[in-house]
Length: 219
Image (cartoon, rainbow, N blue to C red; front, side, top):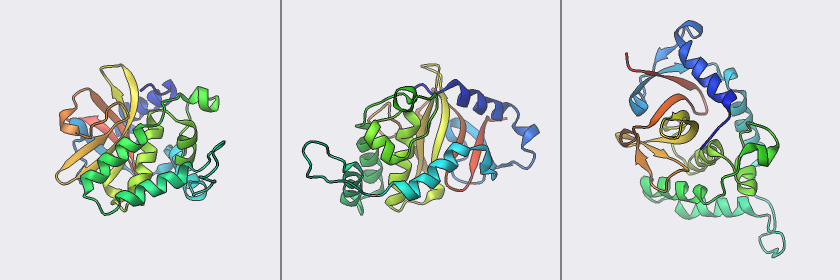
């Protein structure tokens, strides 16, 4: 779904100037290499992604259970329900957990940031997403934190900012290494799909807890 022009232009600028502005970049040796058929350059300076750092910090302090689930007039137990859902699938096979997390988050209503927060681009933590709905990166972020809670290897999970060439808009998804594949959790589809089966996504950059990557066409 559409994201702001600001982040799209920033991402494209990153890609176009990667070899000039990031001289210490290195082609990644991790399993995510060739995501959507693109090579990747690993980056260690997270200061380029302040919104992501802000999300990670606020998740720790604000995404905690709260509210009274018995109140029929104003139910404020969104996070309690989320944690209860996660507990219910813990221990299930990996793909079962991935598919369940994708479906659970995708039930929320899509709402653009301007309607929710009065600004063009805002990255929401899970508390905000479950209360207000959200746009594409908000779905991906909550799925990221869901799999983190379930104990997934954080090096095997990334939020990916990309360009949807079919709709001609920027978009965000969650990519998860599973076996010898990377599967995509997308708010635009109920199915969890291999990245190899998606031809209309061009990755711009991806990020996890510790670093981020630029994505470039294979040379």
